[in-house]
Image 1 (cartoon, rainbow, N blue to C red):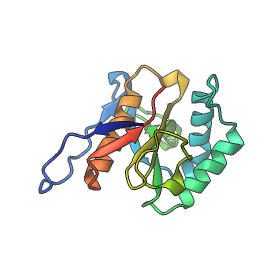
Image 2: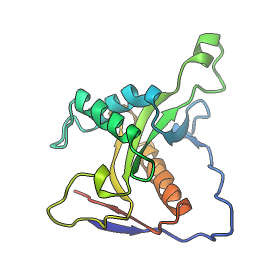
Image 3: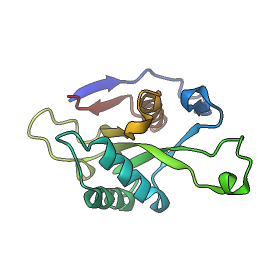
Length: 171
């Protein structure tokens, strides 16, 4: 496991307001990161399945949906999945475009205890520490800074909840 120590911030300062992140610098493609909801499970499952399709970590769509539902049913103290969704831009001219739902293009799974993470035979992260299970970005949206934005959101979330480190495995 890799220990990623987070830069400390003043505990008396309020959490910083999120800076808008525009995919490809385009104001018509703003990325919003928020917790997974029942409404976003299907889109999040598609992203995870597509992101890991060509890897040994491939997860069939039905298993992704089960995983997302399981994580959604857990207490927030056990774990959380964040989704990165592209919002319809200000340049939407048709009412139909403006009303279209955000498109989920990324996920980040964060676990806070053993009940919400896989078991490890070695390099086990501490039981009471945040563990970044994975970050998945839809292949058609890679190399645009989205994974970096998801990681920044995870780090900010952990810092705001009193953790100074995040653990992860890398390959």
